[in-house]
Length: 170
Image (cartoon, rainbow, N blue to C red; front, side):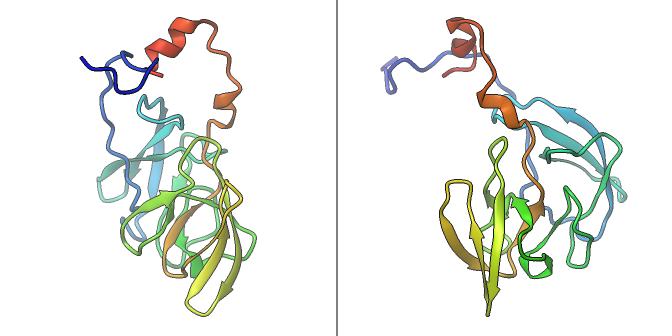
C-alpha cells in the first residue's frame, strides 16, 4: 500500500454502529438499555428501546444512566438526553448534537465531552456558542439534544504504551 498519512494506519477491525443523529421518533418515549463502547468515535453510545418496538443507538449524554427515559419532540421537558427544537429551549441551555440544516440530523458538538450553549434567539434564528468558541447563527427550528456528550475525560486517559495508540489506528 501507499502511505497516505504518515505514522497512521493498521488498528483493530471495526464494526460500524448506525447512530440516530436525526432523533425523528417524535413523542415516543424510549428507555436507555445499554451504554456501549463505539470504536468509530471517542464518545460512548446508548441503545434505546422505544415504546413502539424500535431500537436505535444515540450518543451517550453525560449523566444519563441505564433505565432513564428519553423522548424527542416539540413539547418535551428540558431533561438530559431529550431532543427538541431550539425554539422550545430556554437561553443558556447546554446542548449537543445540533442540526445545521433542518431535518438533516445533528452535525455539531458530537465529540466526547462536547457541549454548546444557546445564547440568543432573534427572529427566525438562534445563536449558539460552539465548543471551539465560535458563535454561530442557525435556524430556530433546528433540533438539538439537551446536555453534554459523555466520556468527558477521554483525552486525559493514558494509553500506557505506543502499541495502544497503534490499536486505535492513530
